[in-house]
Structure formats: C-alpha cells, structure tokens
Length: 340
Image 1: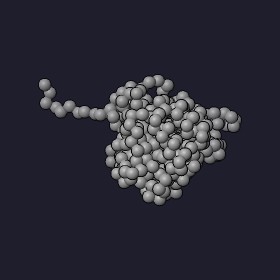
Image 2: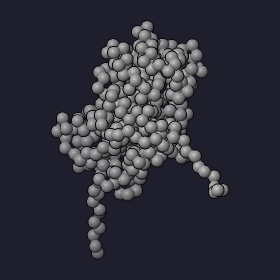
Image 3: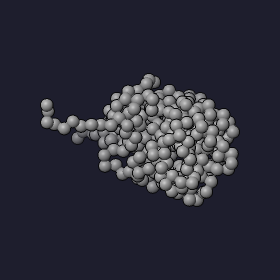
Image 4: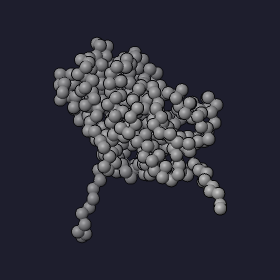
C-alpha cells in the first residue's frame, strides 16, 4: 500500500474564494445585523438552514426576531408573507433550489402578486456546490425572471452583499438575492467609486478589444480574466450587472454601442437558457444592435457532482476557461513597427 497520504476534497464547498484571496466571513449575516440595528421591523426567518445561509449570525444577535420554520419552504414563504402584511420586513433564507423549484407557487401568489415586502435569500446559487442536481440551482434565474414584481439580485462578492442588504431593507417590494455564503471574496475593494444600486449595472474596467458583462461570482472571474488577458495583449472591459431584473438596459446599451467592434461576452453562474445572457441578447436584438455575441455559462443539462474547482473547469466558468473563451474569439491587430 502506498505510504502517500490520500488527499480528500469535499464536494460541499460553498465558498468560491481562491487561495490567498481577501475574504469576509458571513457578510450577509453581519450586514443584516447592522441593518436590523437601524430598523426594528427587520426579522430573520429560515427553513432549517440558518447556519448554512449565514442567518445564524442574526439569530445570535436578535433571538427574539429570528424564526426557525423547519424543513417546510412553502410554510416559510407563507409565514414571510404574513409577517410582511403585519408591517415587518422578513429576510427569509433557504437554498436557491428550494426557493425556485419547491416554493415557486407560494412566492408567486402569496408574495409577488401582492407586492409584499419579503426578501428571499437563496444559498448555493448556480454551481456553488458539488452535491449535484438536487442542490445546484442552475435554472433559478430562468424560473424567477418570468415572475412579475420580483427584483433579482446576483452580487459578486462580500462588498456587494453588504451593500445590497441595506439596499434591500430600504427597498419596498419582493426581492430574490442569490447568496454567496461562508468566506466570501472581496474583489470590489479595488474600484473606489463602486457602489451597489438596485437596478444599476456598473462598468468596472475599460477595454477596447472585448466587453464582458457579468453577474454574481462570474464578475470576480471576469475581473481576474481581464487582468490575465491584458498580459496577452487583449484589453477587456468588464461591466458588472448585479441586478438581473430589472435589467439596466440604458447602461448596457450605452456600453455596447460605444464600441460595436468589440465582441460581447455575457458570463453567468447559471444555465445558458433563460438567464442574463439571453436577457441581454434579446435586448440587443430588439434594439437593432449588431455585435459578435458569446455566452459563458452552464450547459443546458443536469451537472455532475464533485469538487468545485474541477466542475468549474469542466463547465467553462473558471477564470482559466473564461480567458480561453475570450482569447479564442478576439482578434487583436499587432502593432506594425517600421523597419529601418
């Protein structure tokens, strides 16, 4: 038997931080505590997933404003609707798969149709767990995009989450947020003028050769990819679309139209069906904007179980794969130096 120690890798990795990357632990939980200090109407509710959606931080700070509903997502949504009707601001947490698949009708009729002030926080969005199709919410945005009155937020890092919590608390209406939990990377620190705003897309980096429009963790990957592409002589712009619905059509159209020679890449931690990519493609087509267009996202299939780094490479959403996709679809004219 080999004397070498066998390395083990967990498939239930919810943190997507790279080695040595600055992180903040449980940014959602701590931000909600701060918001609750200012607003006594905020309550926290969960379906037996307080620890796994970072709501346990809120529970420790405000045990009398924390409600554990058990493994009953439909009940959780109905209870949240009831709390909203009584004037509270419920932040209800579960996994994205359970909110979008299991509790859809209850969210639709009890919350969205009535425009109730319920904030739905979905953990493990897209491919942020290796547990397989039972836990991978690869189609949650597609499911929720068709629901009237529902705002959809896909933050990219701890800073985005911290700022979005207060923005949601101040916003009157139902919201669905795709939560990155645990040790969440901090990548927006380098952009001094960045500020999260509901319904706004923000250009983070300039570039003449390609435009990457992204949301969620893929904005982190887009920034990293842009840095690597620059070393290859490719200047890629990055636009972060933290709000998927309503889409910031004005900002997106202005950015694309500013240089239609650049190919546009939409990168998302979601199926290529029904998400941000198709939303932007539809916008460009309706507005008559002609550009080379590419989607970087998860395939239209049930994904494998396994370790996240392996799966991210396999399905094309790792930084390395984003660099490859952009590089092979961008033509950069070499500078011709005069001969003497």
